[in-house]
Amino acid sequence: MAIARLPRVRENRTRYVVLGMLSTGGPMTGYGLRNSIAGSVGNFWQESYGQLYPALRGLAAEGLVTSKTSPGAPGREARIWSITARGRAELARWLELPPAMEPARNELLLKIYFAGAVAPEVTLANLTRVESAVRGMLAGYQQLDAHWEAETAGHPDAPYWRLTLDFGMTFARTALEWIERARGVVRERGKARAASPTRSKPQGAKAAARPGGTR
Amino acid sequence: MAIARLPRVRENRTRYVVLGMLSTGGPMTGYGLRNSIAGSVGNFWQESYGQLYPALRGLAAEGLVTSKTSPGAPGREARIWSITARGRAELARWLELPPAMEPARNELLLKIYFAGAVAPEVTLANLTRVESAVRGMLAGYQQLDAHWEAETAGHPDAPYWRLTLDFGMTFARTALEWIERARGVVRERGKARAASPTRSKPQGAKAAARPGGTR
DNA sequence: GACAGATATATCGGCAAGATATATCTGGGA
DNA sequence: TCCCAGATATATCTTGCCGATATATCTGTC
Image 1 (cartoon, rainbow over the protein chains, first blue to last red):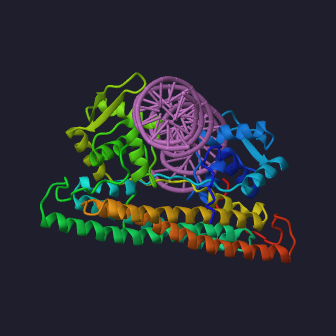
Image 2 (cartoon, helix red, strand yellow):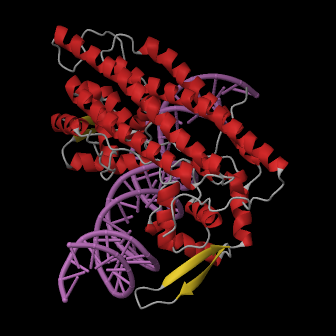
Image 3 (cartoon, rainbow over the protein chains, first blue to last red):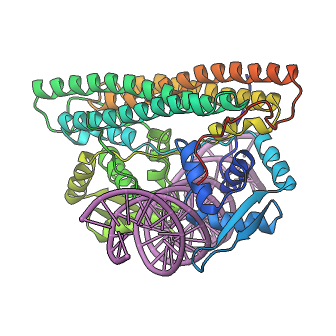
């Protein structure tokens, strides 16, 4: 069973979110684009002005988007961006490429890995904080789900959109289950420490080494 | 139920991985540190030389690590880095802070969200590719699990280390289940398209809008 | 003896993320 | 009516992150 090796991230992907959002949501300003992204794919994709505005200029230079300036007072001029036919083709080309895997850092896991350097209570407290945050995210997803159900009903792409929400909710629930298991492990470690009041330094273990040999 | 709002990432966290690895694995070179990180926390945390070497210099300037130069031929000198007592204190201080949440981009979800712009077959092919990659990751985790079971047995921190593997395996399995559901949704959409051969442009839907209003 | 691969240090460029500066318009309360 | 908070809109800066690459030496194997 040959394992597909997905490509790493290289290319600037802001371009494609812009093309996608202009394709799905119609013409918009850079500001509107930002809000639009935050309100639709914001749970798994973020863009800042520092990326959007240069990306829009680059896309325009390539003829993938065009802009009309809606005149206003100075400091109030708004450029309305639209996707071109070539822009749609470029979006489709990108959508066909295998999605790049994100290596994604996870600070919680890092702190768990090094948890031997602090008291179990510290780690338990942090697990509780993360649990609360995950519950908050889950509640947010559910709220969004209810909102989308009404707003997007009948749109042929709605099933795709809800699938991304499904992903978020499923992973949040999985995280909650893992946190519960992690709590058990940390508590167990606390009992072991209480029984034999050694410091963090392991002394009973003989050749037990940390994984990932040094050299 | 007050929702804990976890902090966003700001600070350079390379520092703390370095401190953690030197604390757990003993003195190492920058090169060894890199391998050590890749072999232990590499599944959820990556560091490159471009981050490690400057970080080591910074930590040394703060007195959190020290180095001894093990002499060698030019181009072969090795600096062995060790954590200091103040370095351990700094590590513990950081471990007590609530872990920052990673917003993490997900290119697969982005392509699912915009999947209406391409044929269902394209999306199905990509789902299969991702599935294969996830299966490969899962196999890697299981192999690592077996390896660690022998290597780290008896070490008091081993339960923490395995917990991070548990996380990876659990999430990989959850991803596989989601992919199966996603496949179902995409296939359903394919049937709908075949039945009414409309283009990507939705025309039947009345006021069904994309979520995340523009302005 | 040749040569691939491991050991070891170092830096560059492009992407990403958030903060911030600036200016104007809009709606609601005092 | 005035004022001001908040929304609309564009733009840039800093820091961090990630991979690629350059350089040089040592080691083991065919």
